[in-house]
Length: 266
Image 1: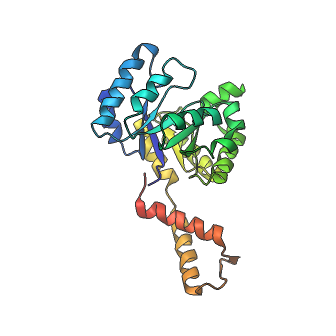
Image 2 (image 1 turned 135 degrees about the vertical axis):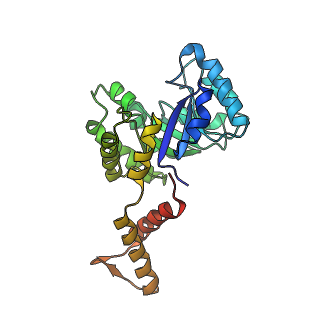
């Protein structure tokens, strides 16, 4: 299943780990980076390691390369199978983590202009499984106020790079309105229209509207069924649906829509 929602939980708050896992998100991110102060880094690393070793399922956002905690994070995760989210992602940073944790699925969190410029190399680094947009940090690094529609050109590049690397649709950044479903729904709708397939969440109240916003609509499901039924009935011959010739991209899109329905992926 490809998650539609990713819920952050601070790594130094183990009392929240199980609650986050039960919140309905497609994936939980145990955060060792921004949510954890320097004085709590070591304790957070231990809490995360213990919870994962006991069978917990989550991604782990490590501290970025060049910080005092990066090497210790990699060492703590070396004997565990958790997926890893790499902040300040660049081709070099992703390759370094891939070498340290071979065979691990990696999410590249694009938060800098340098990271955006190198995206089309990043998607070909072994282990990179998905792209995510760190909109707030990116806006700060790019010296662009705001993290909403003004950053849509950067979002477009993430979508194109994900397609180039044959990765799932990327993950949009956070919405700072924690408990306003209308604001979140509007952000999801814009991101979905641009080609995103998921969103980062910073509060459990955001999970349900994010899941709903990225779920296939009834019209999309109906269209997908008609596309695949027409292809099956044509027996390999050319076929039209709604006045349009059905080619491979349309077939692939229809299958993707119905896969999302069949798996009920959050």
